[in-house]
Amino acid sequence: MSVEVGEAVAGALAALPYKDADDEDMAFSSCRFLEPARLQIMAGAFPELAAAGRQAYAVVATRNGQSREFVAVAKGEAAAGAPELVMGNCQITYEDLTPAECIEYAFGESPGEWHLAQLCQDALETYRGMKFDAWKGMLVSPTCEAQFRRMLQIGMISQLYDHQVFPTPDSLKSKYQVTDERTGKLIELPHPVKALRVWDAATQGYKAVETQLIGAPPEASAAGWWKDFLQELSSKHGAEYIEGLLAGK
Image 1 (tube, rainbow, N blue to C red):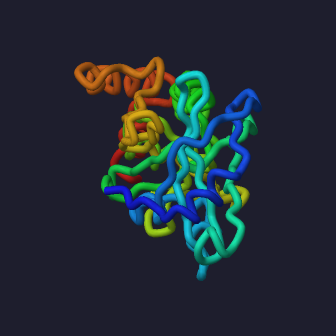
Image 2 (cartoon, rainbow, N blue to C red; image 1 turned 30 degrees about the vertical axis):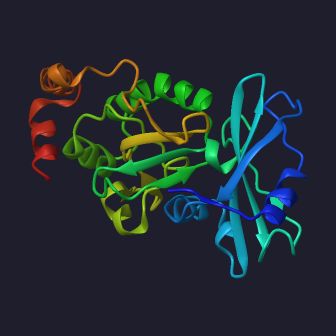
């Protein structure tokens, strides 16, 4: 449930400059206090939103029928302390993003615990198109035996992953990191997301974002695909060796 702000606060927020992705002026439409649950998620990537003595606001602006939600922050009431817009950048394309436009993700171990990634949807689609082949490459030509063993034990990955864009929480890192026995280097293993979503400024609600990697088999045929791929790896590396790694040897 949104909470509307007072007239003086609304006036201060309405005076801020709002631009669309093409740097065209947008018209102020509405504002409210940023919902606590969303504030908590955003603060992971934008800590200034939750700083002591700060108040965060959600502002919707429009242009040519298109809506964009901005986030502003002020010291105390916006009427007393001049509010400022909080902006981020896509980690891949470097385009400007509002916190509300950033992709949110959750892992299977904690499906109700959402995190925010400074990533735009266009970049996400590019990642979806390349990550399945990248995962296969790690198994066909592994960096070290420890990596090979753990990835075989994790099994087939068909959902989006990236340890920099979707970092694994500290409590789970030990499951998705191994040390190269030869170099001592720490190697990050793919940790797939369970769900993705993004805020829709027009409907004022979340919409789901596709997680399935392009090229990955659908769930119905995943088990058969993995079995065939293990046979392919056995032909390349030796069946006894692959079976030993799967058994943790």
